[in-house]
Length: 244
Length: 90
Image 1 (cartoon, helix red, strand yellow):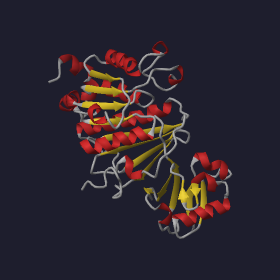
Image 2 (cartoon, rainbow over the protein chains, first blue to last red):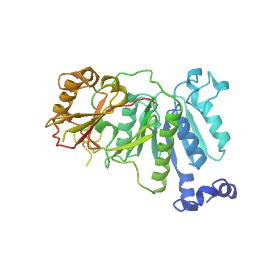
Image 3 (spheres, rainbow over the protein chains, first blue to last red):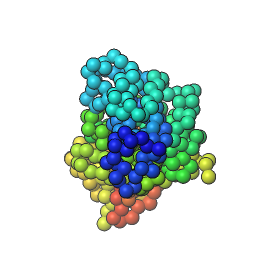
Image 4 (cartoon, helix red, strand yellow):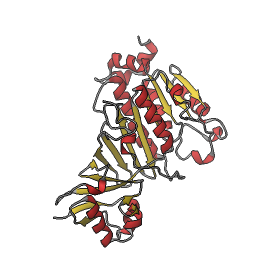
């Protein structure tokens, strides 16, 4: 049940026909992992916290640096040198004390990923490299937990939602390893993509709308264009190809 | 009517700034070879070696992923090819 304070806090979104008090209670009961507390992780965490998702587990191993502040809006000048998950958790708890925030200061690896993702309803990709994304993708498929992909570079971004065993996964598009880089980015780009990912998570948790499944949404901020591409499951995919 | 190849922003310096280049061929690979005949700088931009695209280059045919075996996919007049770069930042 929602408390009187919760009814007031979420009043405007409870007014949305597809949410209502029942939907708000679903959000309150939901548990979401956000992998990464940087450019994408910041807007994702802020909007899921504001929306009333009951538990958010934020995972990041990094510390805040000055060069993060053009885009990682959960972190401020006073946070430089702090652990990102601590900096983020402080802001999120101040934004919405009714939400449980789990701040995990760890590097996601093959060895610990299963433990880190345990007991959640959704996994959100807010990573800054492909290799960790594939670790998350594989574990999401093994645990049959939806995975919400997002990535950015410069003014460009993309998002796709993965329902394990049902829709194309991130690895279905794998063409071989890609060298890591110090990627260029301006904060508005992860803001756009992170908000799309957060919207997808909310839709999934509530069972409403059309998810970005088998659809790769590309965003070009310079041209102010969204383009959609169809992506199908790859039977040869080494992560999900064996799942019927 | 030829195939339209949509050039990624990063690659337009190799196509005199053109966003769309018309190319001819029976397959995606043939169209990309025709693209390279017109704009030789595109070869190193999209191919790691002969008949092997860079891993970062994704090919979409008529707004659908052409992966795997992109280069062998047949095309017909009026088709559209998008050359997109994979993104990894966050």
